[in-house]
Length: 577
Ligand code: MN
Image (cartoon, rainbow, N blue to C red; front, top):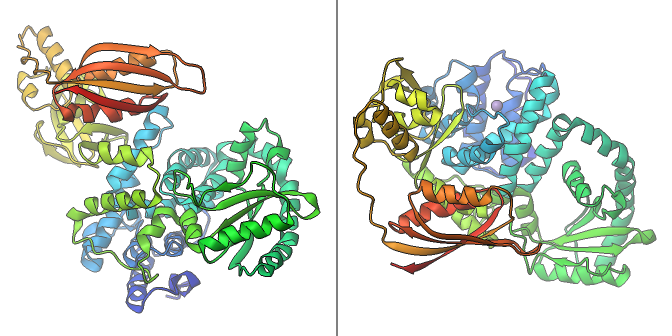
């Protein structure tokens, strides 16, 4: 059968891949082509265009051949009769693991519940186990967004909002600025149509004008640089993304004249010293606006972003932002963690030997850590992810695809009580991924858990021996009391350490209550809890003196406190042990 779609590796982004990689990619391509057969997309295109587009995106990020093969195969499990066992047999365990990971993430349902958004993002990363699964999922979503207009309207809105809330922030947090901007701009018209129309009406003309202007400045600028002995590798006009422009306008009274970087000029020069030389050359000809020179090379943004920005009275006196950076800085700004992941010193894509599935989790945490070190700043999100989500949390699904966040070792009984106290009380059995299991089975990440209930069932005292959550324990005790069964509360554990907590917060009604709830939920003895208001912009500080059983308990509490809305930062000091 003649393929209407060109082999992906005929594209320039595949030029760096060695022959054996290309052979693997071609094999995956042929396999997907065969599996998807005559399937069509809603857009009317052959289905294969979709995985091929995802593969191209990842090749642009220079990811390894396994990832690209997995991207080509990412929809065969859900949409064709092919099984994961067949993938494993044909392509080995690593590619099967990646495909399976993407398939599992596809089951995640976004319901626009505010409270679930952050959970969903974290769960996404925790469940993925491997950063490459997230990257494939992002590439998958990018192409789905590009073809969104083919879907019915109610679906478009939901998918666009999900992209805004889950996918774009994830791309941002992984430093893939290029993809974040694309996802947001593709989602913007569907997620917020009125705002989008307003923006386009206001700025489309300005965009065009500034773009033309930037083209006029380019040769003049290049000339100035060369006069000073700087050889620019690339000078291009960078139009601000629509969504980020809209966000900025919200902060600037919707006044477009206050935006100086609608279209910025970006110059890439070989070395760091060239960046400063280029800054000098720029200021020699165009007077800078005072207070607008930003040296993100000396002081990178928390995301690791590096560049020099200056705003000048440019050609014809027009106020223009100029950004100066090296190729490495450019690569990192656009590709973030993917840049770090994909390139070896030789600058060739490499495949990553993870030595089997069990190590992937660790490998990717390690990778995150290295990346964090590299970007210097500490991203709170990644930090909390590492502490909170790789040690002791698991995420499981309800049969409807909702996410439950439970501690490691949690059982179907814990799960049942988290769904609803009545479900817990009446639990008589459980099915995990379709198979019957005992009620004390430890649940694993990503499993789908279904509780079988019987109307007249009641909580059993035996459950107290294995449940892992306080929620379940509390409900079981209550139910036993109702049944007239006396439960001896276990002797309270001795409180061994005293700690002084200090929380920087933006005060709001109910904040103190939320904080004390977290502390009491963890069975912590609160000696004092006081707030001291201060004038903005200084944050209010809340201090608490608490008694705890051990350090581990303290480590559990800190990320929970940090996750409370309006809590900016939490510090602690151990007073006595
Ligand atoms: Mn897909």
